[in-house]
Length: 289
Image (cartoon, rainbow, N blue to C red; front, top):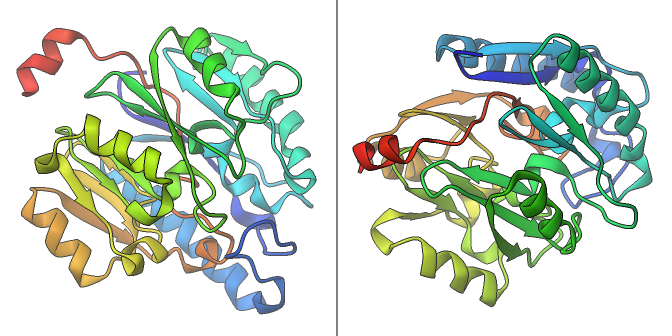
């Protein structure tokens, strides 16, 4: 893979039919939302392609509406795949589907090794294990969905440093809803989503000059749940305040109407899983400083 490669899911079976996080309201779902979801997914895919990425799309499965959020399927680095195990029964049916997907990708050479999480642990993929290429660490969220004990498995599986961050609320239930490393070493995050200890960890590891704090409005718009490719940040429609902050730091926003997916508690990052992440050579890191 010589260009950014993402996994997405056909949204044909997406709806909000159950409630496993505070954003979800099945009574508020309408047929109009289904049409808008198709448009939003297509626009996100188009934004990725325009940014130079390749997109692999898997089929929808009836009865698995949250299959549209493949970020939760696995942690992927250097062609190695650590499969997720979902906490809620509503999503556990996704596990064999994603296993089959990764087996097909392995056959095609897009991934090389598939690893199972040990029994007794939950971990919901790249949503709670975000690779920071600038720092060469996995930022690992835990609490609402992923087990703290799974962080050691990530460290052992990939041989890379992990930084544990405990999430403080059910509203921001995955790390990707409230934390986004950006090219150049900046980090966009929502402070209220973290416990005091986790917030102290972020601030100790990320200098103030590199921290971009999201407001409650910006986080609720699911703008922290973003895909970053070089200077481009592909996200849900942003408040003016966040546009100003990111543009001042040199980033270019690509905004997509993802309102139907936000009704389920997800946006750009959740709707994608990057497959081509590799360790960044130290020389490249130094050259970027």
